[in-house]
Image (cartoon, rainbow, N blue to C red; front, side, top):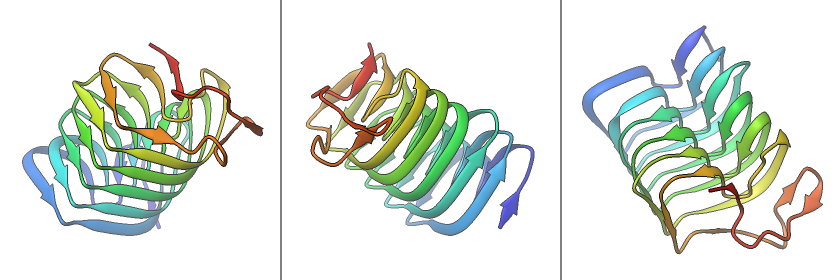
Length: 178
């Protein structure tokens, strides 16, 4: 069990100028803001890594793998429950980087901007990635992404099983707002 204030992660709170490669954590991680299962605030590329557990933040930027990522995330995944106030994602709460070949299998709960894979996506691309689970959000919930300022290719969520606010979603893109 890991408990902290802000910038809290299962392995790292904050990273700078390193790569995270073939790493994993299995824990319950609690914090206020910028909370992630593997890393709270990631300024590192993450490759071939995963998190299995529960992540809870009472504030913003809460994600199953990373709360906020400024770099790339490739071949990685997160499973478990993720809950926070806003910018809450099954894999990443917020990202400015690229995401490829990743998935989240989670229950995601957020007040504003809750999404299955990535809540706030302001990066270059999301490709070959998916979400399977449930999303509960009061405002701006998305099956895949809540807010998107980038390119999404060959990525999906399961229309037949993903529930958004207890209803099967009929939004084939799973992106709340672009």
